[in-house]
Image (cartoon, rainbow, N blue to C red; front, side, top):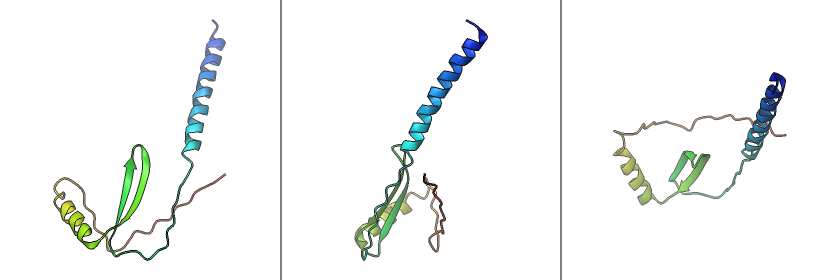
Length: 99
C-alpha cells in the first residue's frame, strides 16, 4: 500500500470523526428556557452546575422553614466546600449566535 493511500485512508477516518463531532455539537446547540412570571415567595435557591454531563440551572422557591434548614445545613459544610457571599446578583451578559 502506497503512502498516498495510507494518507487518504487516514484523511477519510478523520473526516468521519469530524462529522460525528459536528453532529454532537449541533445536538448540544439547543437551549430550553421556561419563563414563569408569577409572584414568588421570598426564599429562592438557585442551583447551578454540571449534572449528568449537561449544564444545569434550577430555581427553587421554598417556604421559610425549609430555607432555614438549607442555610443551616450548608453552614456546616464550610469546612469542606467553598462558600461565596455576594451583596447583589452578578451582572451576566451572554451572547448566543444562532444559525
